[in-house]
Every structure is written in structure tokens, then in C-alpha cells.
Image (cartoon, rainbow, N blue to C red):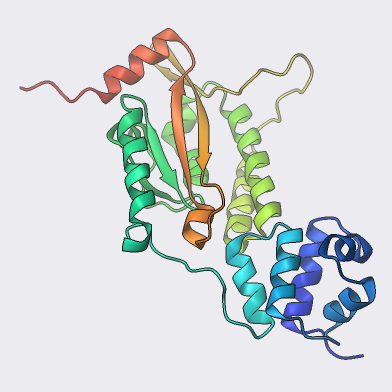
Length: 263
């Protein structure tokens, strides 16, 4: 039996990650289970079209579709431009309008590895208040590891455990090794935190409760992603918009966004 090629190993890993049998995937990709078996053992080399077809059926992110193509001996199909590249300027302009238009509430942009790459002024002030540095890598991990944020969060354990679940879903969806390392680091933190009880009604949305003196600030977040992206950067990008969950929190966020009064 031939030694499995890098493509064969990666294809099998993605199929297993998605919980599909060879027959399931073959039916979705409109090929035979025999041919798929040959691809997974390295007996057959796939065409670029077949790699892309299998990638779509497995919902493989664009970055990893390029990796599958290269592993099969084909060039990458999807470009990866920095967000400030001329090719992405129309999208960059829209993101800038979203960030500016969301003020006085915080808004920020993160990439596929949850790194903070941009924010509006209220967003920058919020992260500074929580003791999270923009350059600290995975912003969720930095938030959960920040002693400042932990001291301010009334429901720190609840937020930490739910954040772990969100990051775990991303690791499963993307297969990203860097995210998996961040997940492992967060699991070390969780070992010291009691898991909240799951009995009783589930809230419509989990709101972090930040205690600032006598005031409690409650927020929730919506996430905007680009549809039908054909660029790796845009495929991974998301804009997160923070909203107040009640009137006192609204007043606090508006005050946070106000520039300091002149001396």
C-alpha cells in the first residue's frame, strides 16, 4: 500500500473533523467512495477542481483550502492581502465606516486567530480599561488572563466557560493550531474556576457584568462577517460591535466615549 501523501492525510483529517464517512463525502462531492478511498490512501492524485469540490463539501476555510491545494501539488487559489492593501480598499472603507458609525459604543476588528487589528476610540478605551494590550495576541485569551478584567467581572467564571466553548467551536471549524494552543491555555485557567450550574432558565444572551465601584455595566456583542469572501483575510475577518444591555450601561459607555474635558 502506498504511503499516504500530505494531501491524503489532510483530507482524511478534515473528513473526520466533520464527522463524515467516506461514503457521505463521496455522495456530497458527486464522486465514488472508491475514488475517495484512493485519494485518502495516496493511490490517486486529485485535480485542483476535485480538491476545491471536496473543500467546499467539507466547509474548509479558505486558508486551509490553499493548504490542501499545495499539498496536492497545485497552486493556491485564494489570495491573501493585508487589510490595508489597495485590492481590499472598498471593504476597508466600509469597515472604517462601521467602526466610526458605532460610536459612542465600542467596536473592533479581529482576524481568524482572534487578534485585535483595529478598533474605534471607545473600543480602544474599553480594552485599556480591562488591562488588555492590543498587541497581546488572542484577545479572548488576553481578556480571560487579565487580572484587571478578572477583578472587574462579577460573572468571570461564567464568561470564561462560555468563551471556552466559543473558541472550541472555532478550533473544530478551522483546525487552526494557534487557536488550539490558545484553547489549551484557557483550559489551564478554567481548571481553577468552578463551572457554573446549568440548571434553571438559560438567559437569552450572556452579558459580562463589569463592576466599577457601585455601578455594574452589562453589554452584549454582535458579530459581522463578510459573505462570499474570496480572499483569505476577508474570509477570516470579523467586526464585533458592543452594545449596552440596559440604560445605566448605555450612559456609562457614552461617558467612556467622551473625550476628556479640557484642563
